[in-house]
Every structure is written in structure tokens, then in C-alpha cells.
Length: 562
Image (cartoon, rainbow, N blue to C red; front, side):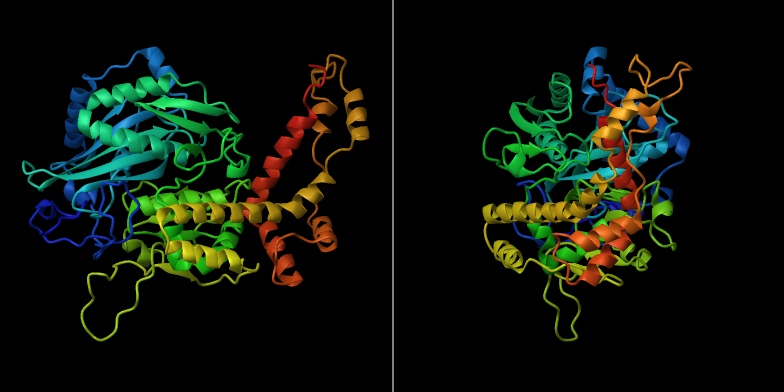
């Protein structure tokens, strides 16, 4: 039986009888997918709007007509919309149209989007190559939101999309199958939470249609506010979710310190900012297990990283997982859990210039291996495939993209591996899902601990920069009697200017590091010095220092009289 690719670069390729080249390797997905990997060849083709679409005006008119037809079936009360948007911006339905290609057929409640933003959502809601004959999978993406539009605002200038993609056979379709996605659009970086919601909503929408969107919106609008630092029980389409909201987007959420009042279980408890634990993330890194310490170092040092996978489900889970490992250090660069050639930011992020510091890019199209061959680091996900022997043609197990594994042109590891943990991880890969989830939690715990150890010398030195109690008393004594930090002229007094961190001195910090050391197991003192010197010159240091200054300034200048 022949298969046609999910996206193609000409209208002729939409014919279901046209030969195609599906993906290779392991693909995180829902249980409706085959349990065994698809060892098939990935295509390099992609869908270009210039090759497939009609003129912009006729396309916009047809889309508007189709959207209006759907929107008439679902109207939400204004108060429901206001409450809903405390958590999500909207829920989009994306379908593959034979005339227009991927298109947003509706967003509930309606959102004011630029044509390019809507097109971004449409393409990112779908895999850019065939994943399976029939099945579904969940993935996520991040797109830049323009300030030119009205409507709900984002927190950081980006919209986060969580997509449930479904493909099923349809004899009535010229393509032979039907493809659609349901996408939750939100302002929050809560991948574990919204991946769970999408996994629940997607199948129900496929079975019951718009009724499920209305129920989902009403459920979410009835939730309490997403207050930082609280643990909530959230009802959603017949299920109860136990969710811990972080104190901030950069706060570490650890299973050992979670507030669920019972032992943490990844099947029932959700740490909002963590990556999903199902399927086990450990399998994503099976081909580069011994290189994870180098990858973690590159993340800390704001090194750009290209993450290649066989599916957007793989890349998005991996990128969120990698981002999570460096908390509480703020991420200083851009990151895209899943990125396509059609993205509006493609030319800005993918070009012949050196990649931007801290950029983490999740891709599935083999095109990126060539266009990003000047990047210093490449992480290809999945299980390493044994090399072929002989001079025969490539088998179906060969990949059109880079072979799974870790490739670096510049990095040499600074810290020692935990070889006991490494053996445990390798053994878990050969075990069942329960062992793999447990090992995934061990892996996350290990690198969260490593990040805390890295920060320890910095925190030690930072404490010497905080004004001591005597300095605080003197500064507050100089403020105006009304305690608002203003003098008689209404100008900020000492409480808003003096009570802040003293200037950070690199030389003094390095002296402190030399004297007290670091709990990280560096291979030598020279390696330790070099690593911290590199980090202090990276954008991550500036982002971390601003974060610490804001925390200290807020605490020191809190009105103690209230």
C-alpha cells in the first residue's frame, strides 16, 4: 500500500497514489499508533505556499467564509471568554484543505491574528512529513506574536501551541485519508499541563465535534486563577488533573518537593513546567546517553543547538526537556520545540550567519541538516541504527536525516560523568515503560541537581553583595516618614535606590571560587575556572543576574510596616 506525505510541494503530490517516503524511527504518540518504530525513509520535500496556494486575496476570502460557517455553531458568553483567557488564548481547529493546504478553520473564542500568524499555526499544527498510516500524536510549538493586533496579550511576546494531530483513512477524500489538528493556544510555558489537556481533548473532538470545544472552554473558564506557587485540582472533560503551578517560569519543580500530599506519580500528577513524562523521555536520548553531560554544559553556556527528530512529537518533548534541565537559570535565547521552513522567523533564525546564542531548534525536515551544517552542535534523537555493510542500496531502515546521536565541532566536556547513573539509564532502556519513566525521573533529578551545584558558588558570592542589616536600617532611616520611599520633592529615596545588590565583580567572584570551590565534579581546577569564565561572558549570566537583582530588590524594599 502506498502512502502520501503529510505535506508536499506540489498539488500533484496530493494524489494518494503518488509514492511517498515516510519517516524513520521512534515517534512519541498516543496509544493509537503502532507500538513498533516505523523504520522507513524520511522525505526531504516540503510544502511551499508559493507552489500550492491561490492568490492571497482569494485564499483569505475562502478561509474567512469557512471560518464563519464554523464559528456560527459555537458562541461563548463574554464572561466565559474573560475567565477562559486567564489560562488559554483560544482553541484552534486546523484541517488540510485540498485547495488551500493546511488552514485554520476556526479559533474559539475568536482571536485577532495577522495572516502570517494564522499561517504559522496552520503549518505547525501538522507534521511536515508522514508519521503513520492511521493514528494520532501530540506535539507543541512556539510562535512570535505581533504587537500590531488587538485582543489577548501574551506574557513574553510568544504564543505556545499544543497540537493533537490525527490522520485516518477516508474513502471519500481524494487523498485517501483525512488530516486534522486541534490546537490549544496559550500564553503559558506549561508543557506538561497543556500536553495533557490536548491529549484528552483531541480524541473527544474527533468523536463529538464542536460540542467538545464548548465543554472544554466552559471547563477551563471555571478553573481558579493560575496563581503562582499553588497546587490545584482542575476538572477537564470528565477527568481531574492535579497540577502544581510554579512560583515563576524559571523555578525548579521537583518531584521530591512537590505539594501533592502524596507520593508523586507521573500518571496522575502534573508539574506544569516540566516536559511530559509519557512516553518516557529517556528513549529520546538513547543514542547519546554518554553525551548528556556535554549537552547539559552546552545548554548552560548558551551554545546554539539543533535538535533533529523523526516527528514533531519527538522534538517538542526533547526541547522542553532540555530547557527544564537548566532551571532556575533563565533561558537567555530563543527556543522552538518544533520549527518548519514555512515559519515567519525562518530567514531570521536559519541563515548563513552564526546561529544566535542560546538558540534551541527542534526540526524534522532533513533540509535543516544542510542549511544548518555550520552550527556547532547537532543532537539527533532516537535509537542508534546499526551501520549497513556491503554496497547495496539503502534499506528501509535508513534515514534521510542525520543518524541518531550527538555531534559537536567545538565542545570538550568539563565535568565528570556519573557512570553509575549512566549504567542505570542504559539498563532502563532495555526494560519496560515503568523502568524507563523511573529512569527519566532520575535523569531529570540528576541534572537539576547539577544546575543547583553550578549555581552554589555564584549564590555564595552574591550573598556578600546584599546590604547587611545595618546598611538596611540606615537606608530606611533616611527615607521619608510616610514610608513610600519618596522625599518631600516626590523623588525616589534610599529605599528605592540604595537597597539593591552591590556591583558584581568578576575578579572577586573568581577569587571566591578559587577559595571555596564548586560542588560540581570538574575534571580539573583549570577546567572549573575556564567553565565559569565562559559562563560569565554568556547571555545566561546577564539574565540570571537581572533575575537575582530583581528578587533581592523586591525583598529589601518591601514595606515592613504593612
